[in-house]
Amino acid sequence: MPERKSTLTHISRRRFIKYSSLAGAATFAAPYIMRAQDQSPNNKLNIAVIGAGGKGASDTDAVASENIVALCDVDEKTLYSRGEKYPNAKPFRDYRKMLEEMKNIDAVIVATPDHHHAPASIMAMKMGKHVYCQKPLTHSVYEARLMRDTAKKQKVATQMGNQGSAENGLRRAVEAIQGGVIGDVRELHVWSNRPIWPQGQDRPEGEDPVPPELDWDLWLGPAPLRPFKGNKTYHPFAWRGWQDFGTGALGDMACHTVNMPFRALKLGYPTSIEAKSSGINKETYPKNSEIKFEFPAREGMRPVRFSWYDGGWKPNEDILKHVSGYYAEQKDREGNPRKVPTSGCLLIGSKGQLFSPDDYGTQFLLQFDSSGFQPAKSKVDDKDVEHEAVRDIAQSVPRSPGHYKEWLEACKGGKPAYSNFDIAAYLTEIILLGCVALRVGKKLEWDGPGMKAKNAPEAAQFVKRQYRKGWSVA
Image 1 (cartoon, helix red, strand yellow):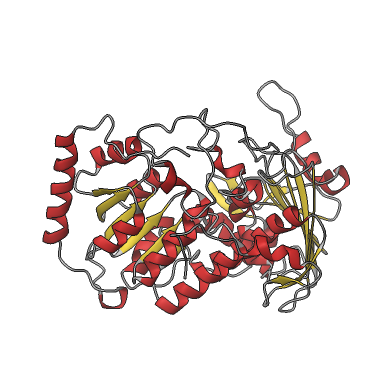
Image 2: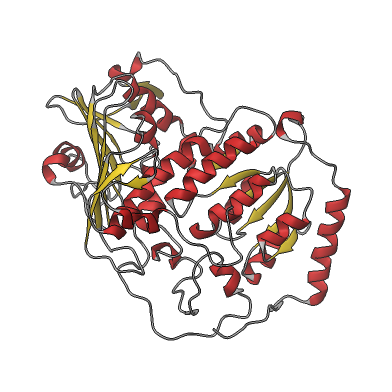
């Protein structure tokens, strides 16, 4: 790979010095903010952002009430366009240098491609920084376990970016299921309209010039070296389908769509995971997949099978008959019967079914006996009225002041955020077992506490990946 020197393309030297001097002044002038247990809730946090574009941009804007003191991105165009909005934030290309140099950082947002989540987050946590990390929390099963353990050891405030966790509808669904509204749940079916990026393809041949604004070596980070390819082959969005960088449709969306049932059913470690697909190679995840997880009895709940579908695959029509019937009774704008949503979450219990038709679990429907689905909440005389089956179930989960506000309050000494790493890492670890099963290509008999496949030692290479020299989570 030809060596590429960093430039300040499209950014004048004068502007770079301006940003650096402003940020440096802010660094030395800002008051020191102590750790969460010593802070006043009125103090502002000094927040650094790793991955300034995409979700990183919206994450930054959501916490802009605090002090944004540093922005880090491997793409200079992104870095300095965001710097226009936050001129007091010092710009960095390498988050390792940022964390080592900036001594006044209290909290960090990590919104990079998946393969950087753990290295950036763990480095920050080990330095005593609070961390907000986008979903999926990690790129590998091992990293998820390590993230959970590190957060606990360092006693920092954490949050994963699955925003549905803050929704009242999701929390009410958890209460309803645990309150027995549909009885003992024996089946869970979740399907997704992802991938919406290329998968099921091999690595392209050849090499293209690296854009002058992009530091390709830093973008690769802990992943193996490979030539740069243009036409958005990897950067800035299509990386999600590549095994070296992303976690496919499952990793991208299950932290949203499986969040509610994972909590409600208290899913621990599965005993087995089995995957089938339209075909997988050693470069990208498949175009379509179906993955089955078997969970044993736990905390008074019966064993349950969780089936995941993506790439347009869904449960069979017999499973979906009540869902299909509900939508067929409704009409779209053209007057045609509506179809089953392209994403959904269906829980089948001994007394009925619960269906959430959106990616975040913000609303849900209930079905009992031979009757059709009915909304769990309806408008009556302009007031929200709950379904009679839910009405008497007590509220046991505190309601959220807002997804980002939860994390900020936790950083300032408040209670842990609902999607803190203790549960978010557990959810991520379970989900990413599906990626392992896809890559191994056979049913895995899983030892959860031991983090290994009892019948497939070859799975270990996908449970814990090897980092490129210079990168580590140790």
